[in-house]
Amino acid sequence: MNLIVVKFYMRLKTMKRVEIYTDGSCLNNPGFGGYAYIVRYKEHEKVGVGAEENTTNNRMELKAIIKALEILKEPCEVYLYTDSNLMVQSINEWLEGWVKKNFKGRKNADLWREYLRVSKEHKIRAIWIKAHNGHKENERCDTLAREAALQLQRKHKEAQWLNSNS
Image (tube, one colour):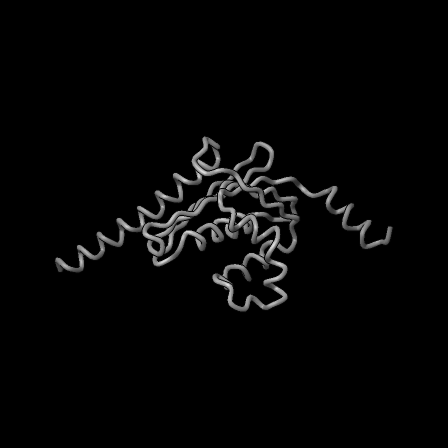
C-alpha cells in the first residue's frame, strides 16, 4: 500500500461522522423558494433555513446542502440524506463528469461549483430517502423549507401592498 493511500485511510479513520438532512421547497417552481438543513454530530444539532425569490426547487435543494456543509469546521465523513434523487445521483454519479466538461450545458453550474468548494475536504455519501414517508428529519426540513418560502412570499406581498398604498 502506498503512502498516499495509507494517509487517506488514516484521515478517514479519524474523521467525525456527521449526518446532514436537507430539503428544498419552491412555490410555483420557479418562484419563492426555501431550504432547510439539519446537521447532526452525536448529540449536537444545528438547524438552518433560508429563502430566495425567483428560484427553483433544485436550486433550493442544492443550497441547503451547501449551507449545511459550510457549518463543518474540519474534514468529516458526511452521510447526506435527501429526498431529491437528482441530488443523490448528481453527487454520487454525475458530478465528476460535469467537472471534466467544465459544467457545459449544466443547470445551476454556479451552485455546483460552490458545492465543490465546500465539499472538497469531506467524504460525502448522498443517500436518498422517500419524501413524505414519516422520516422525522426529512419531514422537519420539508416543513421548515416550505415555511421559509411562504414567509418570503408574504413579506414580498406586504411590501407590494405598502408600495401601492403610499
